[in-house]
Image 1: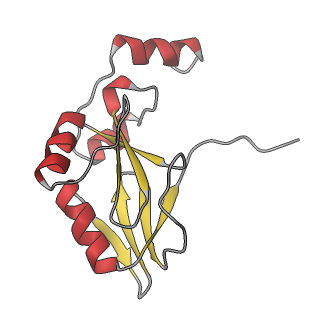
Image 2: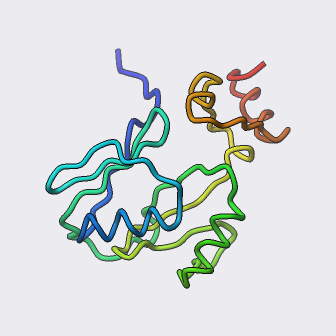
Length: 144
């Protein structure tokens, strides 16, 4: 018997400087610091978190990336553009952070990813899904 994957608790990104990384991500998103050590900082994302770890050792990411779910993708696009951050070519909203981590931005209502009503309430969010996203969930038996 094998274990089933049930979610992602956190993603860890390598950065060169924690203060700079917190300033960068704080300028692009509303963030809440969960905790910090000498070589790591943890940003709350409801029941998950983003870990920023010192010691970037890789080159810039090309295909390797992670997706952040937001309530308003257009607002992120405007913030990135205002900060002069290059949006990568293609159909998605992808960019490289200052340390070369590739980030894809997706909007909550447009994808099958979901949070429970209790988690959304705890985050102070009232978000809905598009019919297409609900259809994806129903096709997998994950929504009535």
